[in-house]
Length: 321
Image (cartoon, rainbow, N blue to C red):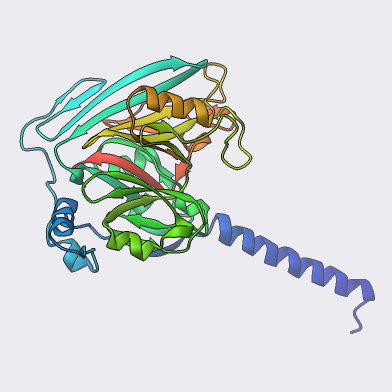
């Protein structure tokens, strides 16, 4: 049977449509698990190794990862309220601020060991299109406090090092936050150091979103800096360090009638004002979420309604699952 001339165009158009649909589904919908997250070894032990040797031993297998598990629960019953948590190793104090017509939630955290500052993947898996709400991932790992992470799954590049394990070494040329095994913070440029070199230097977690907001106690963004094409005022998530094992987790509401949101500079100025020596901007917008003792603290702006967006990962405080 002879196919009319226009029939080839129809067939070609249909094939192109199906192929485009597959590419979109593969990019945004189809889950691809590349690796199941290994239970990490104690980062305290890793920090001690770094102090005693020129080389740091990084988790290389699940057997090594399981060799030195961290405490799975506090030794004594913790004391909790709606805004506080304290035990012999962890202290969390929540506060709410109002600035620039924006509601800002701050969790002041003090730890006895860097072991309690952790990260986790949605569904405990590294891959593409693997997401869950911050509250769901926090529940899965028994987090005391959690915020959304850098949403690594929304990008094809940018270093991904979590709990001492390297998952992605493709540079995106960005400015990363390095959380070392001893709990200290550092800011690096991916164009100036490889992921493997970061591991060798003692990196325990590397978050790739940015930019850095505070470095050496000084504001490191200008009033004109912004993430991509984002609006000047947005919901924001940030993490900062004040002193040894003394951190702040910050989430600002935005895009609502009650809360405008913050610019990067406004967020940086606030973090500096509460004593941060180093602070870093994590994924924001509809991703910004803070969960404390199983309760969503802020009001995430997700489209026209207030609800949590599913994200790839979290940063949290806890003893582990």
